[in-house]
Length: 281
Figure 1 (cartoon, rainbow, N blue to C red):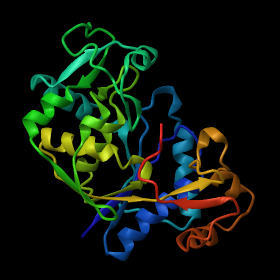
Figure 2: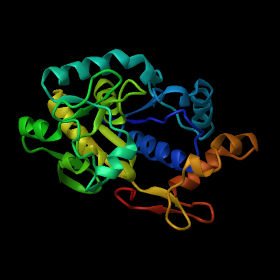
Figure 3: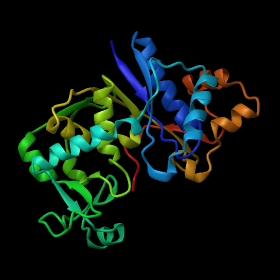
């Protein structure tokens, strides 16, 4: 039996792109006699809003989607993130970093999936742990883990290349954990066997596969579906004012009819499905 999930962050309302992602995950689970879980990724400091998390439940019910079991919130798992961080520190794989984004952009010589690749400024003990983020020494981690593979249902087998990101942050200055660490631990804790998410997160799976090896976690299969994009090819985004599901719901639109249209890939004018594997920085 497969188990997959939809895991939105309550730092802005859901829009059609989120609806499509939830519908894909829900459809895969139901078609295969599996389970569909709902997780709220609510550890992004003051940007995470409890009222939006409640709104998400109404939006998904309006679309006709039902989930299995209780809704899980990342904020209930802070101890697990801290324990994993301490474990990786004890392995000698994390180091503190106080570099700013501007400093990294100025010093970087390579562009990776998330933008300028961290050049390793603090890797050799140049930063105080006080108020620092903690980065994974990817070269040391790969030397320990050895060659790794992962499988995407659409793209096939992949050689893990976390080095493309450089030394990623796992413990943030402003949050208990980075997306890489929290999502990897959450999927393991929830027993997720099929990680269903947008193609913009395809490259992140290279890092997640390495973390699974380091922390002795089960390895799921991935399914990175296409993204809904605007005319011009940019994915729908809250920050660019994509119409919210809540506004559509309050205006009296039929949510189940909208869900059926999205399943059939009948999108509103100006919106299409892109099969990109990652979003360019």
